[in-house]
Structures are given as structure tokens and as C-alpha cells.
Figure 1 (cartoon, helix red, strand yellow):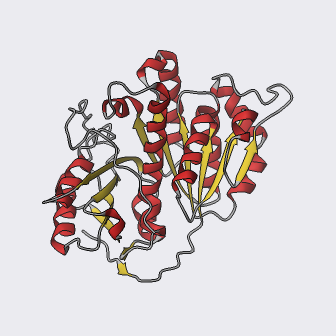
Figure 2 (cartoon, one colour; figure 1 turned 60 degrees about the horizontal axis):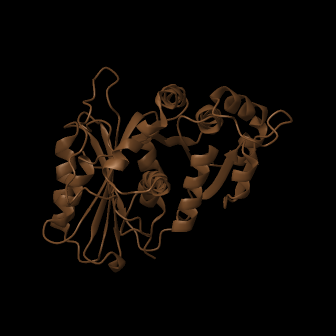
Length: 346
């Protein structure tokens, strides 16, 4: 089923959205979002590392320092990260007041992000905010200890959020050139976190031709548990369906979207998009998920996209007793080689 949605010309959405970057990777992702022009959200950076926090461009900065840590970080120890967040819980709660939607973003496997993120998410959820975590799983080259820490951190975070999107860093490597440097590899992870957050916020905040409101997003993601996220872009003939196909088979998806009872679809492109194009793309996604799934979609039109159509799909609402199919490692192809470049047309 497809939800009823309204066409708006000058919609002024009052949804209060906050994005919280926790730890070093979360802070880097927030800086990237700010640099790329993500609008209509408030940014919060939370860290035990004083130097990292000084580099943050966030609107609000919360230092999780005490006499023992001296602002030197959590030393890759999630227990220290959790304890630091608990000691500053009142500051965290104060920063989240009034939020309708809170994104918690971090790189799993370290100390602060892994340990403090569940504390932040719990505070947001207890205040009634729709709480969504968008996190990365560490690269394999970071070692088994970090991977194990990340796995435990992800499960702890899952208990505190409405929806959890996990982006595997190893898949990002397979989307990148073999000669990519380590700095650029981590920047690619920042881009993926940005895209995960933007794919949802744009549905609500963008000056869209077909607008989706907060209640629509809330209906899909509230209490959804695991959520899967994919993006695709294409040009030329059949661009919309090609973009949709890339999105639902995206290497960013750890598992298949088959069985999802809800999906958010954001279609963005130039003003010459045909109704048939949008309908065909949405139908392709519909056939890939549960036959009775609720689909909510938005359409953003701007000629700054040129000939490109970009589609973001967030699938959620999987049966607790259904076993989602793991996705194989992606084949390198011309259409899937790179993450679509994030753009914010005015």
C-alpha cells in the first residue's frame, strides 16, 4: 500500500531534528554534514577527546571529560565511554530537549562511540523522540578485537533506538578505487553516514514537490528495529528504474530488503522527470519487499541535478522471526562503483 501524501509549494516544516555525532568518527561525520550543507537540523558533538571536540563545527559540543581521562579519550574502551556518558547524562538530556527526531551517528568499535552512543540514544528515546542510529561497522583491517567490540556495541545500541542502520565499511572499500588512500577510505565512511542521515531528513525538510511529513516517517521507523539503506543514481534512458535497482541491490545493504513491511523512498532529480518514471521506480522497490508493505515516497525536483536521478531507499519493519538473507559481496560494475555524490540543490 502507498500512503497518502500531499503536494506542497511552500511548506514550512516545524519538525525539530537533531543529529548527534558521538566519538571521533561521529564527530567527523557531523563536520562532513555541515560542510556539505545539510540544513534544517541542529548538530551536536559528544566526545571524550578534547582535541577532537575543538575541531568540531557542531552547534552544541559536550565534553565527556573528568579528572581521570583529562580529555584524552576513552582509549578504545567502550566501558570508559559509557561511564563518561553516564557521568554527563544531564548535559546530554538537556541538549536533546524538544527534539522530534534524533539521529545518533558513530563509528562502532572504538571507545566513546561504542560505549556512549547507547546512553545518548536512551536519553533521546526516553524524551519521546523518534530515535535513529546510523553507524558504521569497522574495516576488517582494523582487527578482530575492534570488530568484536563493534558487534557488541551494535547490539547494545539496537536496544535503545527505534531504527538502526548499519553501514559496513568493507563494502565501501569495494565501491572505491583500489588505490584509495587510508584517509580517503575513512572520508568515504563519512560520506555514507551523511547519505544515511540525508536520505531521511530530505524527505521531511527538503523543498519537495511531493512532501513527506514527520508522521509519515514516524509510522515507518518507530519501533522498526533493523533498517536497511541503499542509494543509487543513474542517467539517460530508464534512469529512474536503474537508480532504484542500484539502490535495492546496493553494497551498503548488509542483507536483502525482502520481507520489509515498510519503505521510505526519496526520488530526486530534474523537473523533467515523468510520472511514469517515478511510478516504475517505486513499483520496482515494491516488488522487492513484502507484498503488503507500506510505502511512503517523496519527490524533490531541481534542474541542478542535470540528467541524473538519485533514489534513496530505507527499508524497515522486518518480522522478528524471519531470517533476512545476507547479501553477498558486491561485484564491481560501472553502475555501482561509486557512492552517488551528495548534493543539496537550492
